[in-house]
Length: 88
Image (cartoon, rainbow, N blue to C red):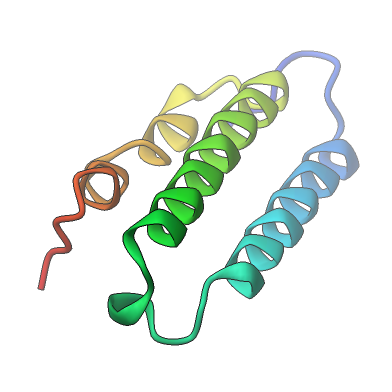
């Protein structure tokens, strides 16, 4: 995976660590039994996930020259979550 010119490995690692922390924080706010949460709460969680993927995509595109990593954040699983259709 190529870094953008002027980006160091340490900077890229820091971005990845920040993204991991953000996703872990998001995971911590999701109720334990997702199917049983009220629709309103589920919508809030989905909006938070959508916001995280947007921020993560922007952060990845700042340091990596290869768009494919950022593009995967809003791939098949993202669309399944947004449509409330989870693959088996």
